[in-house]
Length: 100
Image 1 (tube, rainbow, N blue to C red):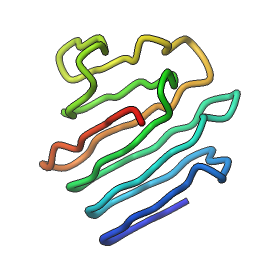
Image 2 (image 1 turned 120 degrees about the horizontal axis):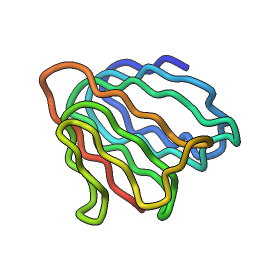
Image 3 (image 1 turned 60 degrees about the vertical axis):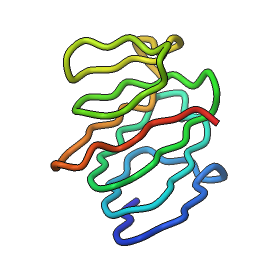
């Protein structure tokens, strides 16, 4: 899946194995597939993940306060070895990853 531009995208009903999202606006993700999913993001984005979703983030991002941070890597409390949203941040903008 590739999205570009200014967006208000609700992707909760889609099964996403990989995605590249660039631009500005809000993107809402559903639960990741059992095998996990890789998402590359760039731009002034707010990415909304379900509460308690397993998420790994690499790159600079604003994340919820209860997530683990290790330099430019972030991990939600439920992140495991498999079945995660794996979000890679590219570019200079710092996206916001929120639960909701």
